[in-house]
Length: 399
Image (tube, rainbow, N blue to C red; front, side, top):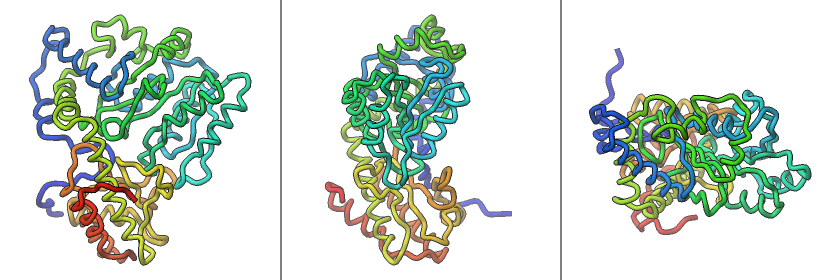
């Protein structure tokens, strides 16, 4: 019988993420009536708090379901059968959103990315919009932070492409692995529908998601004919909470209240973003050092697109990322993310979002470096020292 690992699990997955003890304790609250005035006050405060993180003053709808539920809610509430969506290719999750749209009877036009390591070109997005003279494209759907590749997409540049071409399409953005980790500005960037979820930057258990919705999107909703009920915004607007068709997941809101306190009041959003930038750069410096001696590389080869919430690490040819994950988990009790879609077996992923600090990151990196040695993977030793040197200086500069 295999022995149980000693010590605490180092959970370095890019979602779900570590849940702070104070949030775990808050979620363990006894059950309450979701119509009770005291709960409704907390509920309203939580909705207002999420809007502060999204930087919006517009509509909010919430669901009992993971981020995929919010994806589907956005699609069925905004579109009709046969409508065309433009989806820039960013990786596994842009592909998944496209498959969902097709299964719902929508048409998908993809802006192809020849090299996932570089990311989609804004000029290609702009060209696709310019060519759509009849405005058949009803929306542009983008993934703000693509966890499969460890890259983010500049949403403000997508908005600029829409504005430059005077295209009326809605702008939909998946913030599942960016919200609460990277800056997001729904109203300033002219985003019409934002998809978010509980289990990443918000540091909650998996199972609750939401959409922020603009006035323009609500106008589109009025003429949408795709079937919907449980996820219908119209049905939700007739309920006291303006969300949740059915029982409200009350325990999530006790946890969400504590999550928002930690993000907005205890640390502050600007400091949260700075911490993620600092820890993300430390991870990348470590991996860049390992890349010597033909070692593993940061998968993202475009410095302008590097994600501060997750780093995908590309293994040298002939070496398995799954072997590294197996060693870190079984020998060192460190859990890493695996490769997704066509990157399965080629990359492992280090999540550095949510409830995380320098010792947790350094412990993870040290375990990975040991696993590289155990598995005979070529690399330049001392990557952890590169991260330490950066962090010891305060982590003030990138590069």
